[in-house]
Length: 120
Image (cartoon, rainbow, N blue to C red; front, side, top):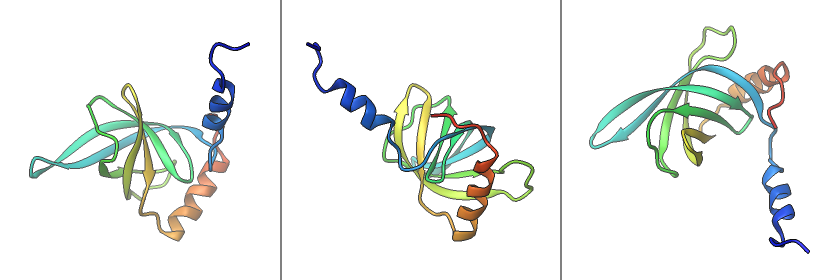
């Protein structure tokens, strides 16, 4: 008998996501409003999905914070500026959920993800 009942079920549920993650690598600027001023942080994307982005940031952030994320996808010259909420943290790897994608951005993102390797 397992010393931790329900662990296998919890692991399976954790892996079940609304949207698959895809490996990605590009620069991201995270803008936060803190202490009465805006703070820009340089970050790096590690994975991407239709619903959000996983990034590395060498700063301490708090779950629930809302930020502006600026980045470009692939060869595109168009800069994306989207609002996102911090949902998950593991060390300096942060998971943000997109809040403000337009229908056009969603279509572009779906097309971009088709060419990327799955990360999960």
